[in-house]
Amino acid sequence: MKGKQNIIAALNRLLANELAAMDQYFIHSRMYQDWGLNKLFERIDHEFDDEKGHASALIERILFLEGTPDMSKRDGLQIGTDVPSMLESDLRVEYTVDKLLKETIALCEQESDYVTRDILQKLLEDTEVDHAWWLEQQLRLIKMLGLPNYLQSQM
Image (cartoon, rainbow, N blue to C red; front, side, top):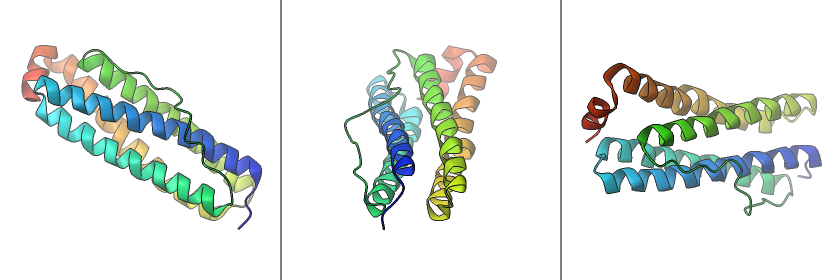
């Protein structure tokens, strides 16, 4: 089915951010594993899998709309150097994706592409209710408990 070029372009922009999130979660999870922070490793490795699923859904939709997925870009990739900076950079990526998802959902509404809109709404729910919320919670815990206590709880 031939899709509208503006929607395909918006989906590719989203894809660049989902791929960045995926790569960022991947390296951060391996850093946590290397440091012995097994609970953070397990959670962030799970987030890596979720982002891979989001990227897959976008790729499948772009292909269905007869577009070409652009796998060469990674927008917003920021690797942290310690736990707080890693959580903060992951949260920034999620906030960016959240904003882009809402913009693309609005575009889909405007262009009457309701199937793409529905696919993106599922990704938005994951982004807001699961990913961003959990990251915000971890940063609050660091402030409440202090970094040493938080790190100990993640071993």
